[in-house]
Length: 349
Ligand code: UT7
Image 1 (cartoon, rainbow, N blue to C red):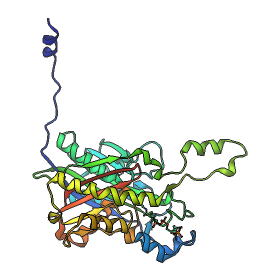
Image 2: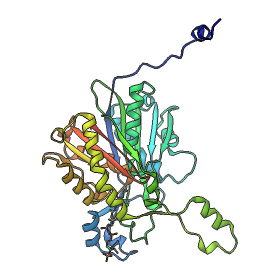
Image 3: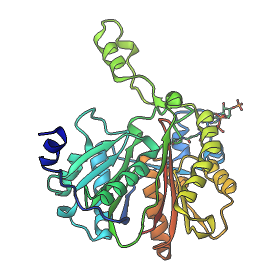
Image 4: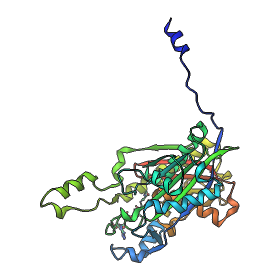
């Protein structure tokens, strides 16, 4: 028997039926109760309410209670998204949780969240792409639904950045906040999620990064006489460098995403960029020449920068403030540590 004949006699692999289109079926949000003012932040750094508002746009942010975990923050956001989608726990096949602030190296937060929500035996994993994490997740969920590997996917972006921010660091203490946003992605009769533009630039990994690896902390703890050198490895940021990267590199990513989807700025109803800094948002709006009717997310003013949670938090707020946006097109764009970015055009649920 020839090799060819042996091969053809073997069984073929059966593939799942692909689904033509996917969409965001529902979206949800959770903001912790505690409102933290700039004046409170300035108790620990040499700064002022006026400087923080002018340079970042932030007036207040929310901090979770000390005992609240990223699972606690995610649960109400996920329940909101599932209710809006009309999808029950037993219909979710995959839980995909984007975060950089789950304090366990292992296991991931996603299986714990699934257990909390009563989702039986889903594929569940965490995704570490910082402020781009939610948009990475929506891109993956779209591909999973369309390839037939899953039907309904819960995508969560959640951060408890207050645990990983140094309140005495003048360069970052005022910028971060806590919160969670979630979406359910599932099959659709129309294209509800456009092609994802995504990428990274690892040579600039140190522009936003945990200051030391965990192993340095262990070394400090285990070396006699070095105990004084122990400090929590919080997240540090070279603000100006990240600012420049965002301002110069993200408008072209937004433009490319619109082109890949065949959507013009005039056809957009909303622009939901990562809530990094109000000045970055304003400069992108100008650079993209967005028409006046396009609603621009400015959730940062009273939510701060919540990394992976910022896009779904901002989108959920836009939809609750103006339900007529539902069915319109939104350009969403996440960018940050990695450096990593991801963007797509979505039909608003
Ligand atoms: O989410 C991930 C992505 N992250 C981002 O996209 C964040 C990007 N970066 C930023 O948003 C901005 O860089 C910051 C808001 C973090 C800082 O604003 P900036 O305009 O870039 O400030 P800067 O670092 O250029 O500092 C300007 C001045 C300096 O003083 P001199 O040298 O001009 O006298 C700083 O010493 O402001 C001073 N400064 C402050 N003053 C009061 C720096 N930090 C503070 C502060 N309060 N907290």
